Image 1 (cartoon, rainbow, N blue to C red):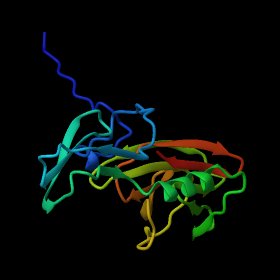
Image 2: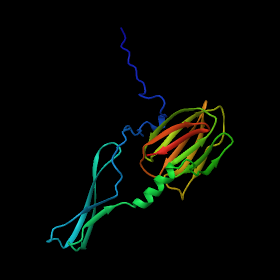
Image 3: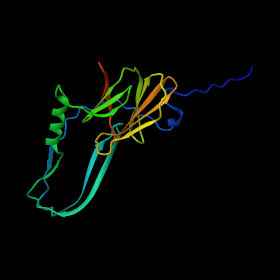
Length: 202
C-alpha cells in the first residue's frame, strides 16, 4: 500500500499572492457608547503631569496601551479632560442617518461606478458580487464581481479623501476584482441595493 498525502489551501477563494496576508477574523461589533468627555481630578499634592497613558481595545479584541510624555505644570484645582470632537461626530452621524444622503461620484466606468459619502461607498453595477472580504497591510476591502470582460488595470487615488484612499480594478478569468484601500482599520457591512451594493465602514 502506498501512503497518500493530500495538501489543500484552507480557503481557495483567497489569491495565492495574499497567502501571508490574513484577513481580519473578528466580526464582533462592540456596543460601547461613543466617548463624549471623561474627567479626572488629581490630589492637592500634584504639580506637574509627566505622562498620560490610554488603554484601548483593538478590533481583534486585544488590549494595548498608548503613552505620551508631557512634563507640564498643572493647577490641581482644575480637572483634566479626555474627549473627542463630539460636535463633528454628531454632524457626521446626523448626515449618515438622513434619508437623502448626498453622494459624490468618484469613478465612472461603463460597467461600474463608485459614489462616496463619509463612511459610505455606493457601488453601482448590474454585475453580481461573488464575494467580499477584508485584508490587512494595507487595510482594504476586496470584492469580486462576475463579468466576462477584459480591460487594463485601473487605479484611482483619492488623496484628499478620508476613509477611502484608493480604488483598484483588475480582470481575472470570469470576474473582475475591486480593491478598496482604507485610511485605517475598520469593520464593515454591505447591503444589496436596487442599483448595486452599499458598503458602510464601522
